[in-house]
Length: 141
Length: 205
Image (cartoon, rainbow over all chains, first blue to last red; front, side, top):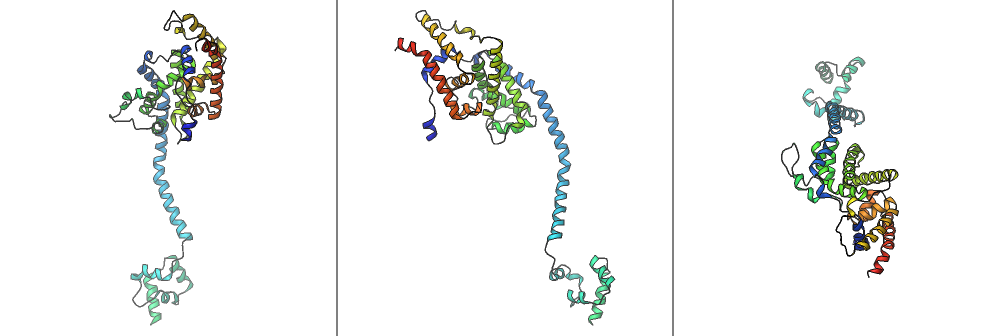
């Protein structure tokens, strides 16, 4: 509303005076199709260059998309592994319940009398799990 | 005022080289996105939309049909060259008309260095009215002189406002001036022209 009130009005007297000395643009004399064609024709080369640049860009970026996605997933997995909460023994039991003999708790396994070397093998995942479980069971009995 | 040319609409409903489809709803800004990737149809569309009003403005600035056509072509080419500088979220038309008007003013300045600005050729042949011809000719002379002494920008502003129907904020956007400055220029130009008209107004109350 304020804007409309403040809007300047045209001055008919000035407009009429200007029209006396100014000819209206001869829009009827212009061949619009020719003008448009001429403008578009002049733009063909720069437009073709833009298309080429755009195609090159997409050719380079297309293989980067899956790579970037894979890198993101790897980074996310690594970051979770590094700073995520340490798994509690209970959750390990739940995940590996089928590997543990019935009646044997993880505490039993960890408290089993194993040598330093065997312990390292367990932690690194290279130990013979069956043999270790057997050892733990024997120790319990 | 700045926007799609109503007269150009029918021809813009079809996009060259593509399946027929209505594109009148596609905004200039959407066309600019395609144009950046070198889409010819998008450029064609933008040219169709704005060339008529661009020609009118160019003609007001230069007063010659051929010069105006050249200026329109030149402005569209420059717009294409600079399209990457067009900021998303802005409107295309004021950005384009800024290029047109600035180049028009420069062309006019360059021309005035080369020669005294010639009056449009057919003024003298327009609607001869023998009864008032002497007085009108005198009036035209005074008005011509008054318009000629206006600074370039003031002249452009008064023509764009009074004859082309642009609003003061639109002109401000085109010329990268504040609305207040445009209004001030308009006021000054009107005063100059009124002074030129004053003797005739007294003679013909």
